[in-house]
Image (cartoon, helix red, strand yellow):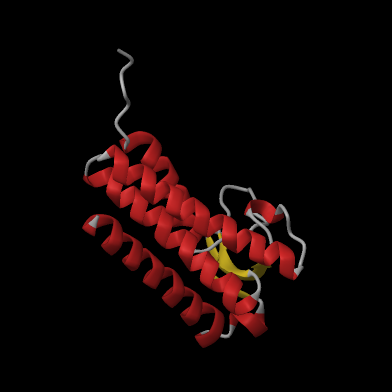
Length: 156
């Protein structure tokens, strides 16, 4: 459980720190766009009221609180499941990534009513219209890690 806690805490802090530095200190909230290493890395301000790719993106208090509740329930369910499975180091690290990232986005929803997305990456003639954040990367990496690092049970 220590691995889950420390990985989750580090992920959460990196997510919130990156959002604070880029959105507030670099004033992306008012500039809307900062080219860092175009086109590979740019900062583009986007408020995500829904889930991935703007799904369920209604700016309503009910949607906001439902998404917060769903994220917290999923975190609790994953934690309960992993605790029962007793996997190895990498499974626990993946769990920490997923939970730390999910809670980072939950804090955004509580504070701002939406998730602050700012990373935008394009390459090789493909112009990516979407922005994301460190928490999104962590949730994705954690979910993939859980798939690969959770021991499979062989049927008897």
